[in-house]
Length: 333
Image (cartoon, rainbow, N blue to C red; front, top):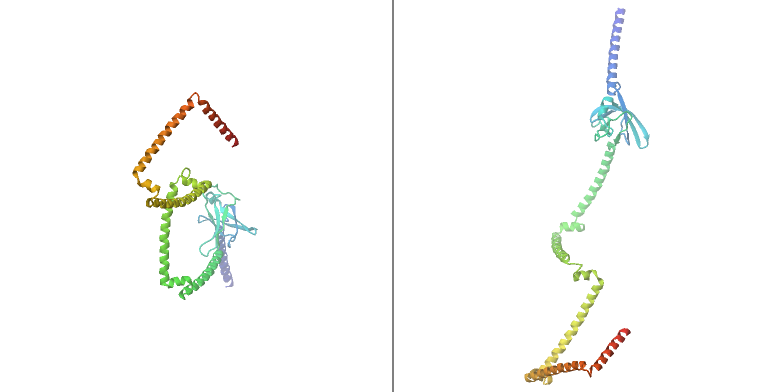
């Protein structure tokens, strides 16, 4: 009876050991398969500023496909962390040297993984020992800190907006007066409308002025000379002043002339007689005509004397004296 019990226990023990060994081998196989312990691998690396909780053995994915695992994580200095990755040799042909490595999460709350993003596809295929570029994404802690600061700022802004709303409701401040006073609002609306109309008219005036200025030839016109030459502008200003003075003098002369004409017309002197007696005026005109005729004949006689044999020497002497006087005047100048 004791022998049978011992054999049964041994049988059970043997079955347990065999099952345990099978489970152990199976577990080793799956773990090794997951960790790529039984395939040919190459090692590449990438440098990061923050690994965000990445651990040894985490998966490496290329375009969403598991291609390897994290081999090691090494702290190079206070700002650089080097990650070595084991990549399956059969997947190497798809990964180029211009690929970019990033650190992300496997799902919403899963483990950290390394994602390799394809580059432009112009690079060569990676080989063992290559280092690819990296890009550090914003971590969850950074996003939470940013959200916390944003919430604090939003709370402060809300408190200030509440103060402004209370002031408006209580009628404090100029803006509140504009909101609550309909008369003031109407006046302000009218003022804005007038400003708009004034702006339109000013715009039209400026457009017309621009057209006038554009039509001016600044190189040849008088306006161009006045605008560009300060000396000429000063001369024109002096001319205008002189014209104004002359205008005043002419006005005075005309006034005096009007008074004289009135006296001549109303008086009994010689001028009144000359202006009113037509016969006398006719005789006076005939006399002046006779004088002019006599003057012409006298000039002809004088010209004849210049060419006369007895008197031309005298006239030539007078001409020489005049020329000598002209030369002396030129020397003095």
